[in-house]
Image: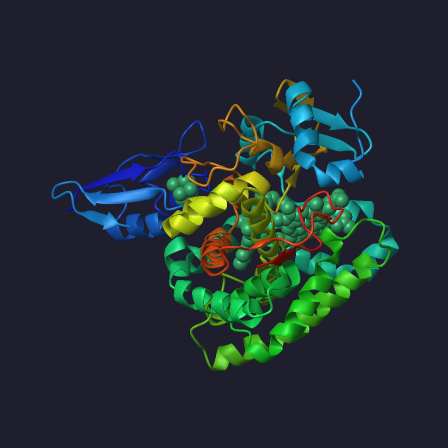
Length: 73
Length: 402
Ligand code: HEM
Ligand code: HEM
Ligand code: SF4
């Protein structure tokens, strides 16, 4: 399985929860109400990409952890 | 403590920033007896409130209904029925279900595809006035751009746009017009009924002949069964049409005014058009369209050292949070290169503006085109008048010349 590296930009994240609702085993809100990565492989890749695309502020960047290739955006 | 308590006093309407700054410094979670609610003015407290939808409700219609007599509830039942299904006025789980259905169509990636078309509309609107040397920017530009963009996206044909805009404006009377207009609720409902009557056949048509537009996409969600009921579909079409009109108009007008009043920033943007993204964010922060939004406490909540009681209403003052020196260095300065710029002009948390990517796109294209095409534009009048409302920061007119 493809391993992912996921970054959340905390200057951008506005705590909409959309990523959490889309990929609930990958993202959760932390104590500050912002998105935190629980497990980069918690959900299928399609769900992770859908979560990143669904983010209203483009706060989420997804990389292939092995090759470093940027998968979103 | 002596504080001006009339939120619609002329000096507060003219300069809300000075007024709210004094509150933020002296009493950041302030009970306003006259208005009957709390004013929350610090960035951190506003954000904390936005992140607490479990305890702080957005269900405006529940509270609205309580204030009505039986007779009025009867008379306004259409309004109550559909507004109760509008995203901004609802709490989870309804909110979550509908937001997730419409969210895909409004992501930054989806909306980016509209950029060439938005640019074209901007230039067409400017072509129409260029030779004349002057315009009233609100009516001749800022009104039109948002209506054209959202109407096309929804699938409203150009020939129907004028009528739809008029009904939408009627519908919005309840929100943006002063409380002393006695007929505003009836007129609002009448406008809404027109919109509903308009969308029924459009929805019917898209059910048989789906197209590449938002109504077709929502119809497909409705047809999948449990996702979206017919009434919810109608409510969502009307809220999408309505929600971005006045707000985006005000972004364009307030933003242009700020650029013209801070000439160095105008020049900076003219020399480097790629600053149009950060400029739009800064203009949203500096003088955004929405001064404040509401929440209702479901239980007692501690905020900024005060106890907000269950049932109390509160005004989260975005205009003040965005000028909080604890969050933004030199907050009263316009700096179009400001980065990061975590302003709350679009709200925050689960209700964060659905249309933000679209409004941003319109702002970016409009500001870039204005400085490029009218490098010598200036204000034609020093007199600025704002509509007296608690929530929106709305210029009545903006006369410019070049
Ligand atoms: C610059 C222009 C705009 C501003 C400043 C703005 C501001 C806001 C704010 C502050 C909220 C949150 C209200 C709250 O939490 O109580 C909001 C919600 C919303 N806005 Fe906007 N808005 C703008 C443009 C638009 C546009 C263009 C659309 C639609 C195409 C739109 C659709 C919505 C919707 C549907 C919601 C409710 C979202 C939800 O509850 O999940 N807005 N907006
Ligand atoms: C997007 C759809 C929106 C809907 C459907 C809506 C709906 C309403 C309703 C039903 C009222 C009550 C009017 C009354 O008491 O007679 C109202 C008032 C108001 N709304 Fe909204 N609103 C919307 C968006 C916004 C936004 C984004 C803001 C700013 C955040 C806003 C600011 C206000 C203000 C300032 C008032 C006057 C409140 C008062 O005087 O008590 N509205 N709105
Ligand atoms: S979708 Fe984006 S803004 Fe919303 S919680 Fe996730 S990272 Fe934050």
